[in-house]
Image 1 (tube, rainbow, N blue to C red):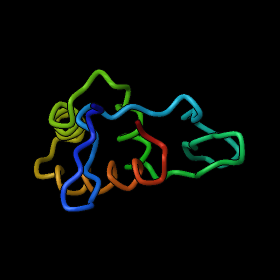
Image 2 (cartoon, rainbow, N blue to C red; image 1 turned 90 degrees about the vertical axis):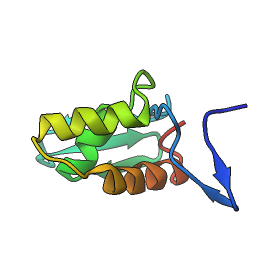
Image 3 (spheres, one colour; image 1 turned 60 degrees about the horizontal axis):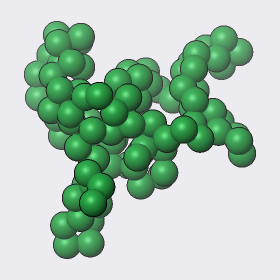
Image 4 (tube, helix red, strand yellow; image 1 turned 90 degrees about the horizontal axis):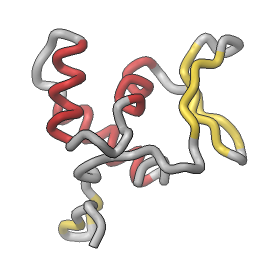
Length: 96
């Protein structure tokens, strides 16, 4: 069993999100942004998406990921937005 929960047909965020091997996250000077590279192309990321994906290494639980981001940006209450993005990234096939 994997660590993704299915509830009523909806896929929720993985418990320990990890970028799939097929993808590589890197800073692209020409784009002046972080990008997600894969064999068929590239996705230009905004700063928030890049910061979330940088931490999706499979070692952090979702709650630890949220705590790390809230500490890094000295804010609270980010969990709903982070969960929505992680679920979207998982649906797009970026995360395992």
